[in-house]
Length: 307
Image 1 (cartoon, helix red, strand yellow):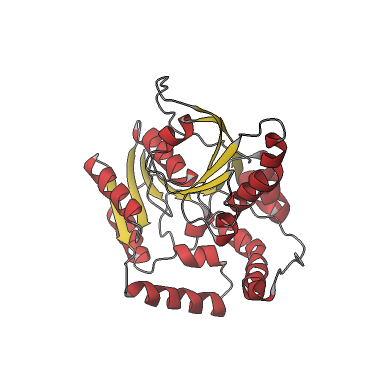
Image 2 (cartoon, helix red, strand yellow; image 1 turned 60 degrees about the vertical axis):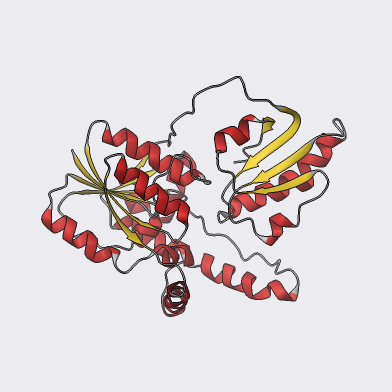
């Protein structure tokens, strides 16, 4: 089949987060039996731009829209702030929106025949798909409605707390609208399938569960291992990873150290916020970005994946 694959970030097997690795596995798997055209925004992070270059060199049919560095970065943030204030889109969707991507999609869909348009993540569901091809949305994380979390913290955190609570209230309406625009909605877990069915019962026949996969690294046995080290690796722009880091450092590690006093924790990953950096201590190391995720994880006796 001819497939148009739309992703929020470039597929990248060695990226410092889970989503690019999963996207790379999907792209690789689809390309084995299909003709895949990839459309993605990229940048300003050099890691994303390098991933685009590697994909093109490897022969992927790729069309990318580049986000720019300074000074246009601040113009982009001003545009995003205005879009959030005057609309009903969640901030994550506003963040991933690139105005120049819509004309690119329109041109590709007008000039080429596709059997399937596969859209990854609801952050990309705001784009218009002017096509008769089958459309599939992969929902990475179906958000359930929840009550207000009355824990604003100290006064300096009140603006961020208020923004986060207001933003979360936008998700149910946005998700229902996004899901309804596709012929099929793919989710990774039965829990997410249930969430979609509860929020939009009329869409239940369109929902399919397909657990994601990744490309497994080659197994090696010649890497020295620190027998007292625990590793966690994640992209901290994903809030559950921040919760995981705090849980490991504050609740899990002290209990482990009662049995193994020399045990220590290394928290690695991109964009660690102050809440994670504040966990640093004699037994907790904030590593930051690692160049080789496989090598980093193999050096530790225990890898924590608190999902």
